[in-house]
Length: 169
Ligand code: S3P
Image 1 (cartoon, rainbow, N blue to C red):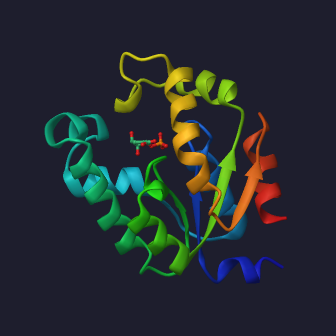
Image 2: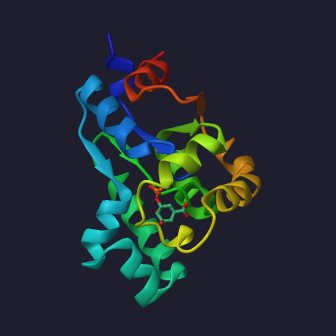
């Protein structure tokens, strides 16, 4: 019954903390597709962590690596791909995703995201900053581009399996 959903790669986009990786993993297992995580693939390709890439090479180098990694992953057979929050914002990366995959924007209230990102301190864009303020600025800058995704799913504060069902529906 999921056959039509298994023909193209499904790319999850959205702000930090919205659950792209956790939901993606569950969606992949529900559809019996492989799961891939662009941030992890960038780390593997660079041989260092995301904070190290930002610190040692800078954000533009990270974005370039991210674009290359996503371009490579989009050539693979259909899978579920979680991207970092900035990937879909870059026009070049977005065009690639739009041309080769189904894009899904996961959306939740910024207060929910701020609470979730506070649990993990590995995000260079949040270092030493108030998460809610960063997320507000990102929402303002990025929502118009996330809105170009094929599908938008309002997740609220729902459990991941509920979001998976919503995406499939
Ligand atoms: C970023 C989000 C991060 C990671 C990097 C930059 C962003 O991924 O790619 O720190 O620009 O929003 P998550 O969305 O998985 O946190």
